[in-house]
Picture 1: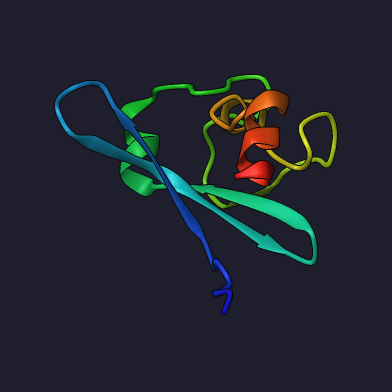
Picture 2: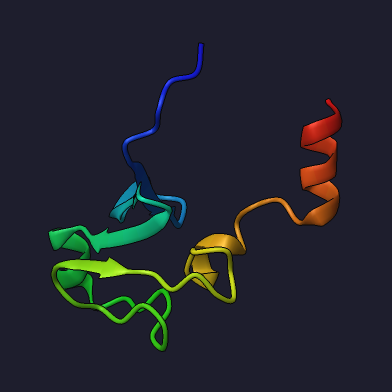
Length: 88
């Protein structure tokens, strides 16, 4: 039985523990992101052009990264990795 994922929490770890960045959610095939309030105070830009530091929910565009901001898409398996996941 599959369980639906309601949200994915995003964090950074520079060696001193996980710092909460925000959360991703999907609704009607559209992906949304919202920064954690504490992370906004850090002024650390993880994707300054496409995902600027601001409050509120951000709707991510469908292209070019299948609905994800590039900073998140880069952490996923590439084509070869996806093929391995499907086969095994």
